[in-house]
Amino acid sequence: MSAGFTVAIDGPAAAGKGTLSKAVAAHFGFAHLDTGLLYRAVGAKVLAGESPIKAARGLDARDLEAADLRTPAVAQSASKVAVIAEVRAALLDFQRSFAARSGGAVLDGRDIGTVICPDAHVKLFITASAQVRAKRRFAELSARGIEDSFDQVLADVQARDARDRERVEAPLKPAKDAVLIDTSDLSIEQAVAQAIAVVDAQR
Ligand code: CDP
Image (cartoon, rainbow, N blue to C red; front, top):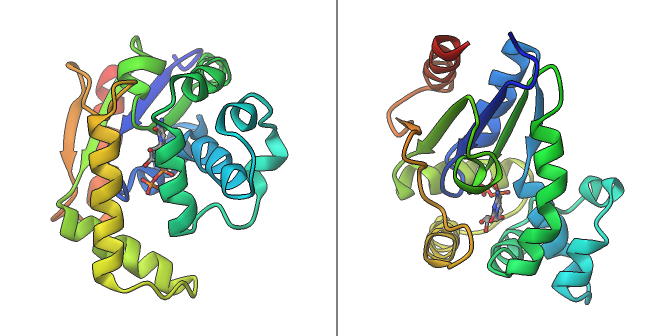
């Protein structure tokens, strides 16, 4: 049964949540929401001079299609606005409605299994060592022509992880009932197969 079936996928920066979530959603025919994009869109508006709370309250679908949401500067700005309770509150209803859609949904982020969808049918927490995550993000950014050094990418990932874990509002942590998948030594195919197996076991 997939009516209202929700898969929550959380984890630290550049752990591969996006790739896994897309693959799981495609496999089961579920819709996918990258909730990081909401925070990135707010972060981008703040870099353009708006106040974080106003930006979050006024967010619309077109803001998620902005061209430059995947830059390191926007990622840092996203993690700074993400500590603000009013920003998180402004984004809550949209995420919950998306999760409840008939036909099934996969949401990936930091607090999906703990705060947004505490009753999700499946919760996954995706990790990998900071070195591996920075290596993947470095390759991703290089492929898009963004020439940060590896050390800079690693420092950015670690700074964001620390901010995300230490904040008071919806900190990054696995839900008590989440299944942990460490992808440090897994290929994309292996990680996807593990995630699909966990979902299959709950359907
Ligand atoms: O793709 P990556 O893992 O690097 O980051 P992202 O998922 O796009 O998230 C960007 C930032 O948004 C994170 O560092 C968090 O601070 C924030 N975020 C959050 O607080 N809660 C979420 N559900 C998703 C993202």
